[in-house]
Image (cartoon, rainbow over all chains, first blue to last red; front, side, top):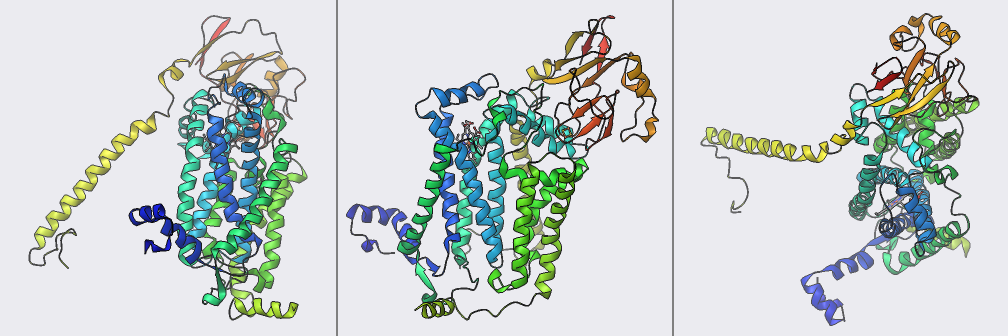
Length: 408
Length: 186
Ligand code: HEM
Ligand code: FES
């Protein structure tokens, strides 16, 4: 790596001793990216941006927040009313958390549609699922911090999930609480962990990217790049394309923050926590609803908890459930139908998770839960055997050139 | 390549030497693991309830002022405790069924010290919500005891689970009568 490629002498001096500029340069220009990526490939960068926004606003919030049961709620109200721009910072933190999940859900469904979890990207995919789990833990603990009614009862119900474990369950719950109910020790440790976890996520993101750069991005037609004619350099082509996505993302985030800051939250969380009274209808944050629906679909406590965790675990083993050698759904006509059914199923679970657990909602939740597992455990393995896929193009350039000619 | 920092070559000439070295290596790892566990334990155990939290573990209540048919809620270890002065009808209904048929079979007698005074931890055994039914006018569920709104558990007039996802009866906390009027919970 010659330092001569940099004209600035300071850069050259540093790069000779600490080759960070060469590394950046390498990522920017030498990293070949398939030339046919569509806008769904923006969402990884957007997730990274969301993480940065969360960390920056979070650290500033922590300067004004008090992690004590007697002061937490009022310290958040003080942030909203008295701290300079506190309302803005908190609303960004609140809404960017929701946006983070929207982005990551799209990112995951992108992977499901284009088969990005298949060899040789299995570990890349599994690291993604780890990030998703850590995000859920982080968001759950963050939601407890303002110490409103939903904070308190959400924390109670979720920590109580562990009491379903036979024999040691109760001791685990006492251990998580640091007492006999969700109380001050719980709030303190949740704050400590809520501060820590985003940095753990950042660490796993680094691994995720190392794994990505081993084989490069998948692409909409799901076949490997065969040579330089199939790729372009990341900079300036995809940096520009990512800027478009980033601008859209920030625009929509601003609309939410300035015009609908509480649309994705629950009004009961503006009532201070009361350990003596549960609100009539408790619901988790919207991004947990599909899993909450699965939990409630099962009439047995332990069974419900196990199935809820299993819903995430199937994602881990997905690369071994779908054995079809064809990645992209574009060439898998039957898979494509089931993909959309799964998508509708997940939306349905999300809707049902927010409804009271009674009557027809329970029945529908059960059907949707069964379908979810059927998709992963039965349909995907069967499709890998029985589906007739469409012929694949010979290279990425082939269909690109063909459409270019057709359009001309 | 010179063997500068890799393991000493396992010489084929003296197999006993290999065995001894392996033992030292395994023993070192084992001691390291024990040491690491010993250091990790305080870091983990600090999360269990602290001494002052444990010290707050009892509450005294004057139960003589609760009129028949009334209920009060007190706090014990940060949780609600339901104390209900049951009517003769409620006691009769709690005894009217064959307890063997219940999900968590238990006689009403085993759950009270004096039949008219029912003391329960007011925490749903499903996922920890506080059931309704203490205040007049609140829904008491299909069995006239308590109803948990979170996922729909119904408890009877003895606080036993009758319908819904909760696996066990409402817990009876340990309590003693200090006098006819006062009980100490915990
Ligand atoms: C993965 C990144 C993160 C996610 C998903 C996340 C999520 C959340 C959520 C959902 C809330 C509740 C907002 C509300 O309803 O009021 C919250 C609150 C909070 N977070 Fe984070 N957070 C993240 C990173 C951080 C970081 C790095 C810090 C730094 C200390 C932080 C500090 C706080 C504080 C002090 C609060 C309480 C104030 C409030 O409720 O607005 N967060 N977080
Ligand atoms: S917590 Fe009471 S029914 Fe679930």
